[in-house]
Length: 419
Image (tube, rainbow, N blue to C red; front, side):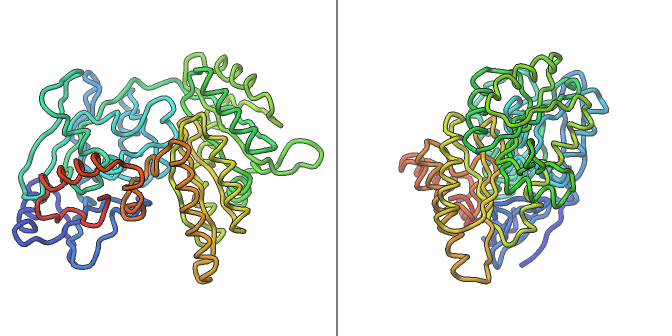
């Protein structure tokens, strides 16, 4: 195995040309924050690291766009945009350390998706090096443009299997007002899920709608000491679920008042009118996975269902946890139906490991049964490659393989991932 750390597009092109000639597998690696194994290189591969490609090459406040190299940390771009009075909305949980290249590779989402969409909704164009070392530009810098096939959208979410992205042109938006946050707790997961349905159905201008279950709340409390798991009422029992509802609308106070009225079965409601307090609550939500990691070995699922089926998915997860005798913490982006059931187990115990795998399979199956998808934002990678044929029909699979063969005829780009 070898490591290549290019600084320029020309460096990447030279490396791929050699690898193509000698048919050496190449796996691109950004920050390594992916959760589906797409950046895990098999033996005999060249790892192409984007760690040195960290330039914010342009930030244009008139055209509202930024041009960046793939190694730019997402939070750094968001900070640079904010200094120009603009915003780059994509906000994955790993925002503090994930990179733009990785976000593009998996079409990363995050907590803003309910209003702003995912990474791909902000990618205007790409500079890409194809498998043989040829350099191309896809997309545009203009507001509109439909010339030719949409190769930009094809590359977004392709997880390094079709080409190596060396530059990204991104759309920016005007910076919104500081957000206000509503916290609602519920005695049952079902009640929380029904509130999600009511909130989404009302068409409110929400910028985030997140959920954490009792297991996750307790784990986050143990990690942060924020007191989120202290329930309402005399028994102070930890709620079954908490919703974090956020709006960055100019009419945020009115929006959250309407949202509170829709949480009819909430055990407790509170509005964090101080934006800093709201950000602290959202940071606690970002700590969900690190907090659950402390409970033992874990397998993180990433499934997305129609928003009307969130309740059904939560119920299925509860049933799976009871059937397998496992702790499964659930958190995720309730506003777009993207849930992250996290299965806690002991991998040194064969019985526990087998139960965890059964639970993972059962939850992923449930997502498909409910009309959903096997991955909402983490990608297929290697973790879910075997599931792709269960979601995609034979014609779509064949077309996907034909595209892969056309752009990477020797199969050197991230072999074993996705297809």
